[in-house]
Length: 331
Ligand SMILES: CC(C)(COP(=O)(O)OP(=O)(O)OC[C@H]1O[C@@H](n2cnc3c(N)ncnc32)[C@H](O)[C@@H]1OP(=O)(O)O)[C@@H](O)C(=O)NCCC(=O)NCCS
Image (cartoon, rainbow, N blue to C red; front, side, top):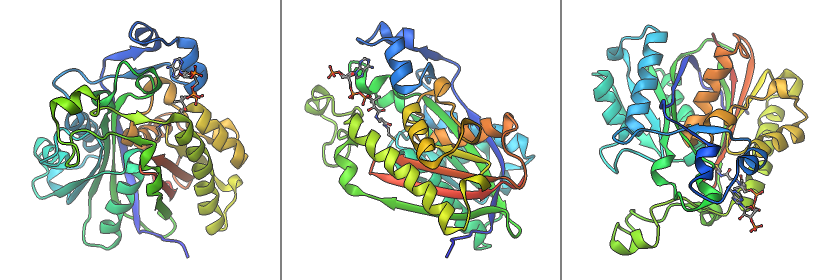
C-alpha cells in the first residue's frame, strides 16, 4: 500500500553564499589536486558561508526568495520544519531563528536531524500536517553550513562539502498530485562510518576534544560510498515497484549529491540516462540537507520538470539514514 499524503510542493527556492572555494583553492590547503577531486567526486567548486553568517542566514534567504516567488504572506505560514546537522547553536532551534526573521507570526517549528536525508525526512514530516488538514501552509527547509565542521587538514573530507540551503512550500493537494508515496529507514550500525563526536553530551567541548579534533566530520569514505550506491538504487526501485511504475514513467530522479560517482552508479543500476537524473554537485559539493531542495530548484529553473511529471527523490546520509519520496509535480 502506498503512503500517499495529500500535500504538494507549490514553490521551491534556494540560496548559496556568494563566496566560492575552488579545487585550486583547496590545492593550497591540503595535498590534493583539481584532477583528483574532479575525477573522484565530480566537484569543481563549492560555496562557503562568510564568517558571522551560518545556517539560519542561508535558510532565511532561501525562504524569503520562496515567499516572494509564491506570493505568500509570512503570517500565513503555520509550521516550519528545518532539516540541519549544523544548527547555528544547540538551542534555540534554527527554525525559531528563521520564524522570527521572516515574520512568520503564527508558525510553530522545530529542527530535524537526519544528515543528508534530512530534507527528505522533513518533507515527509511537514507534509503529514498538510495531509491531515490541520495546517494549510508548511515551510520545509534544508540548510547546512558543513564548512563549520570540516577539518581543513583532512583531505579525504574537506574537499567534499559546501554550504547551501533550499526551501519548499507545502499546501493541500488534489488527487494524483503531490506526494504519492514515501519510504524511509535507518540502519544505526552505520553510525561508526560518518559522525562528529565532539561537543555533544557524550563528549562536551573541552581542551581535550579540541586537541583530538573531535568537532569535525569523521568519515570512512569507501564504506559510505558502497552503502550509498546500494541503498539509493534499492530505494528508488522499491518505490517504483510498489507503485506499479517503471523507470520509463519517471521524468526525473533527484538524488542526494554526495559524489558524482555514487549518482552515476545509482543511475546505471536503475538503467536511467543522464537526461533523467539531476546532477549539480559540480558547483556546490555536498550541501547535506541542502542538496535536494537545491536540486529541485535547478530542475524547475532549467525546465526539467513540469506539472504532471513524476519525480523521485532518493537520499542516503549519516546514521545511516535512507529516504525516498515519490512526487507528481504539481505546478
Ligand atoms: C571520499 C571519497 C571521495 C574517496 O574516494 P575513494 O575512491 O573511495 O578513495 P579512497 O578513500 O579509497 O582513497 C584512495 C586514495 O586517495 C587518497 N585521497 C583521499 N582524499 C584525497 C584527496 N582529496 N586528494 C588526493 N588524494 C586523496 C587517499 O588518501 C587514498 O590514498 P592511499 O591509497 O594512498 O591511502 C569516496 O569514498 C566517497 O565519496 N565516499 C562517500 C562520501 C560521501 O558521500 N559522504 C557523505 C555521505 S552522505
